[in-house]
Image (cartoon, rainbow, N blue to C red; front, side, top):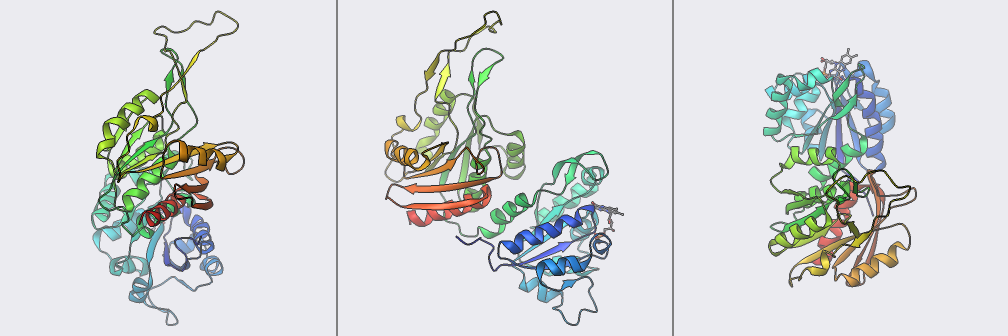
Amino acid sequence: MDSIIKDKNITVCVTGGIAAYKAVYLCSFLKKKGAIVRVIMSKSATEFVTPLTFKSITNNPVITTMFDNSDFIPHIGISELSDIIIVAPATANCIAKAASGIADDMISTVLLSATCPKIIVPAMNTQMYVNPVTQRNINTIKNFGFLVMEPDTGLMACGTTGVGRFPEIESIYGFIIQNCAARNHYFSGKKVLITAGGTIEDIDPVRYISNRSSGKTAFAFAETFISLGASVTIIAGNVSDIIMDSYIKKYGNENIISVRSAHDMKKSVEEKINSTDILCMCAAVADYTTECNTLKIKKNENTLNLSLIKTLDILGSLHKKTNQVFIGFAAESNNLELYASEKLNKKSLDFVIANQITGEKTAFGGDKSELIVLSNTGKRESFFYKSKNENAYLVLEYIARSLS
Ligand SMILES: Cc1cc2nc3c(=O)[nH]c(=O)nc-3n(C[C@H](O)[C@H](O)[C@H](O)COP(=O)(O)O)c2cc1C
């Protein structure tokens, strides 16, 4: 299946930050996905990377000035031509100019005149980023409709650790898909319930059994459902804090219910199911639990036997209404399709999304997945190894079309 951004006109504005070289990889990535990429560089950006590099990567002339570009389209032309504009990296200076409506170079002028989605990818030293002036400017441009990405946290070029790093290219791509490409509101007015992450089965007050599910796929589906018009409630088990925080920053935490064990998750789904149109069971719910000891088990014996008790199946206890759609996930290390199709039939699902959890293309923990969707009408569709966000979009688009 073609990439969603194939043949889209994407203008990448590169400003003068240390991460300017990473914009080269971004352009190359977008180009490989089939986009028509054009680059505008600020004067400062040309101190970090040469325009020739971007010209060679994009096969398009690079704009570096407002004037003297008689062989190229002026700022209004670029604004009208672009399907998406991305400022990456976006300096504190460029964000401040966008917040004040200053138009003293090509990038700021294009940002002022363009009506297409405008994505800002801030990248700067932590002190610059957390400075109240920068934060105020970011809030201002968000209110003006700019789509601002959250920078990564980690080791900075200046040697300190903190927030302000240029995000991974895959994350930027995911942000583009969720915010710009997904324009069809297939699930408008639908109430979606998504379960996320692993569950925790307590052994004693300090120990537990869980699994390696991070919740990344569930949150990618949640964000994609939202971008396709749905209102989403997430029942979250044990999920990565980074993923949860990033979601809460965008959508708030009102529609997140945190649970611990398989039993809690089951109870929570049962409470919500009547007001749900689409149930998406993404969580890796424990198949077995233990009797929790009230006191910490002491390290006395050479061996310790834990007796595990089968958990109750969540889907098994639900009475599906005629118009409800149930989507399940099958994470398997072998016989993927066979087990997935057994699950589809046994649990009366409308769709099962199968993903491999071992080998090179494992969906566990990473940013990418390879998926197969089986439907109860006997259809089968594969989604090749790519970002979880992009696959979430493609899968939901496929499901929406199948349902209509
Ligand atoms: C070595 C060096 C690295 C810089 N890195 C950044 C950066 O990562 N982010 C940022 O906002 N500014 C950074 N600056 C400051 C900007 O280059 C400066 O504010 C400039 O005026 C930005 O111009 P522009 O927004 O038109 O590109 C850096 C400056 C230097 C000299």
